[in-house]
Image 1 (spheres, rainbow, N blue to C red):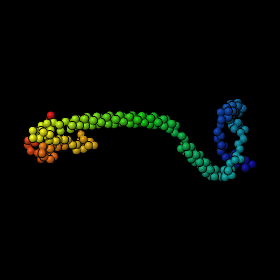
Image 2 (cartoon, rainbow, N blue to C red):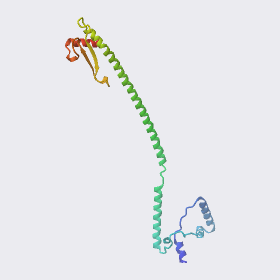
Image 3 (cartoon, rainbow, N blue to C red):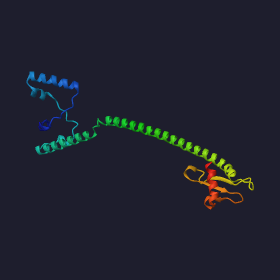
Image 4 (cartoon, one colour):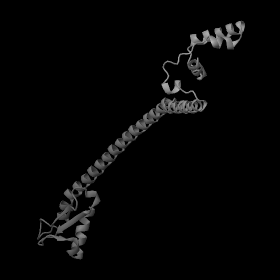
Length: 211
């Protein structure tokens, strides 16, 4: 009847076949060739259009069928494009492993830099401490001896005690970065800076510093 002709006029859907179905289809093709060809086999296949929407079932005019054909093809292409966009990047794991390897190398290099920085800081602190201890040892030795030597140089029968001399640090926190002040007090005089002493007094103070 006319309804059957309309149904048969619809394009047959292309099913997705599993492995067993493919084997059955191949066997069917061989059987069809031996019993009258693939046309006879095709007519024995019953197509079920029950789940198709009504607008696809009821398309009597060729123009409607052509329009539906274009719509369905466009829909298939759109779905295929969506699937292509959803396809996972198979190289992502490889790229991730590469990034993890680079990260491990960077972490190792960072730890090595930190270790070398710590070693350099410790070596620097050790040198600073050694410099300060060496400087202070020399300063204390000279400071302790200069007053005694100056007294011997400036003592006399009239002034048997002689004068007094001493050294002062301008910066006690970092003494090696600043100067050392040398002060002397000749007998019967008050303490004065070196630039305020006479020529002879400066000479005596210099000799005390030398010896």
